[in-house]
Amino acid sequence: MNNSVGKWNIAVGLSVMAGFMVYGFVLIYLRDFSSNKEAWIAASHTGQHFEARLAHVHGNLFSVLNIIYGYLLLTLAIPAVYAKWVSRLALAGLLMPIGIFAELYFGLPFYLVLVGAISIVSATVLLAIGVIKMK
Image (tube, rainbow, N blue to C red):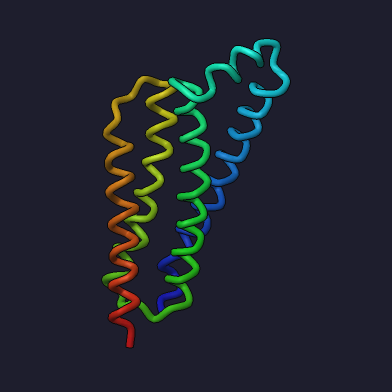
């Protein structure tokens, strides 16, 4: 059991979750309290409003996954090679929701979304293999 692998997943996961929670409160404000709320609600299932909701939901989901994976890496005797890669790939998985956010608000290309998606799936598969290989 390596007490350092996994702690960054928990710390970063909690930090990113806090950021996406605040972003969720902004979305609630836009939907319920802004002067243009009717137009926002009417457009909430398409385009930028839908993308904003995707970023919020995936940001919190991938943060929770990092917290869970970090905890598992701290408590289970997963082989060190698997543990390090799971940790790194799970952290890189956060690029997906951050990429959706950056694409929406800063016009960045979709590459971060793809890298993040591939990373979180890879982390999940490697974590499963690491658990199977535990002694």
